[in-house]
Amino acid sequence: MTVNPAHYFTLLRILISPAFPLLYLEREWLGIPLLWMPYILLFLLAVSECSDYLDGIIARKRNQVTDLGKVLDPMADSITHISLFLTFTQGFVQLPLILVLVFLYRDFFIATLRTLCAMKGVVLAARFSGKVKAALQGAVAFLILLLMIPYTLGYLSLATFQMISLVSVSIAALYTAISIVDYIGANWIFIKKAI
Image 1 (cartoon, rainbow, N blue to C red):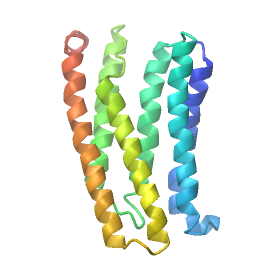
Image 2 (image 1 turned 180 degrees about the vertical axis):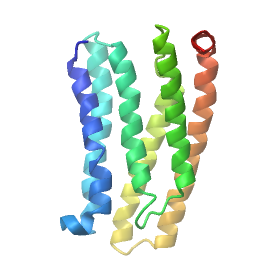
Image 3 (image 1 turned 60 degrees about the vertical axis):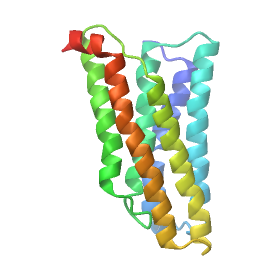
């Protein structure tokens, strides 16, 4: 199995993911001032999302779209976003765990279907709805991190910050649930054969 340049960008996203909980949850231990934290996390998320964009461009431009890339790319999206949203169930963001579990269960379910189909020699590619889901989750993550700036500066109340975060993540969770139906519907023939 050949690893091409696009795969390295995908692997970069996976490697960045543990930094989110580490920096957010262990900020004081690491000696990071609260005012710096949103900027650091925004930078890491921007690097992650840009690498997601670049791996696709490179793979298509070099005609290196591979089965490995079809599996790694959505996995990297899942690891990045779920790491971030699970992190936000703690600390001052306080997202309800049940919303993050929607993201987690959806991705476990799709990964299981992909594995079953792969065992039968069929690779299930990512759906457009899955790409929209990933983009929406990324946008919501950016929104929460951007709102941290006025919150840490004292311009936004904790209640308002938490309410906007809750509503935006709820919308992303709803779309994530809808994307499961789309994925099953589009791949039903392959799924039936695999099962």
